[in-house]
Image (cartoon, rainbow, N blue to C red; front, side):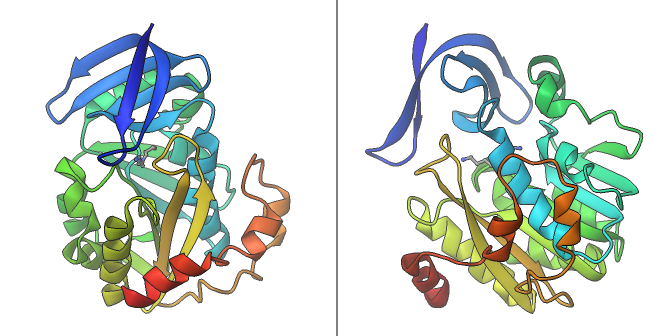
Amino acid sequence: MIWFTEHWTEGVGLTVKANEVKKIKSKYQEILVLDTPEFGRMLVLDGLVQTTERDEFIYHEMLSHPAMVMHPNPERVLVIGGGDGGTVREVLKHRSVKEVHLCEIDEEVIIISEKYFPTISQKLRDPKVKIFIEDGNSFLEERKNFYDLIIMDSSDPVGASEVLFKREFYEKVKNSLRKNGIMVAQTESPILQEEYFSKAYSEIRKVFRNVGVYLAYIPTYPSGMWSFTIASDFIDIKDTTQNTDRLKELKTKYFCDSIYACLFSLPKFVQETIKKS
Ligand code: SPD
């Protein structure tokens, strides 16, 4: 056994006892699979924890379901990043979905996830899913006015993912959405990564008319307090009274009607960060 540490800031991190299961260097990043007693299998990209068997449901449910429920009829969904398949699995829980496109830059993430994380990647070969091994940024240029929902399931804004947190990218996302389209992105920790969070929010705000932030509590992500930013031009995303009948048939472990009802209730300091952004 080793002790693995993800350094969250200069002086804080997450340390877990682990057995190394697999370590490879892909064209884009180092991919590490660990077995941990507390969190089960853990996927780590360039030293940053992406997902674990124990708490992945929180992130994947909260990234996908709020927007899926808000949209009047989400048929075509694009997931950018998300090669582990957790977001695709959640999206497919909605009956309205006709096709899910997954655009992942690093094919090795998919290969590793299918081998070592079967419960997360289980739906990647569903007939409704089409996988594109491409850079999300150029992928969007070829698909205008096409998707009902675009989900940014990216890694942190360093390296290949940096571009996914910029205004130019959000413009492309907007152009690829149909009328009533919604985009949602993971936007880091509002307490430990305030700068990234507030930058992402302000860039999204410059592009979309309606923007909202909500939180979830994910033990293996920096500070545990994680943010998601959702945006749309035509849907009033702050109205969480619509389509709530759909929540009854959703099989989830974290997301539920009471979370949906107060989705945008934020701690005061997060409200203030948003105001300043
Ligand atoms: N600091 C970790 C942020 C990772 C967010 N994306 C995870 C991808 C899992 N599908």
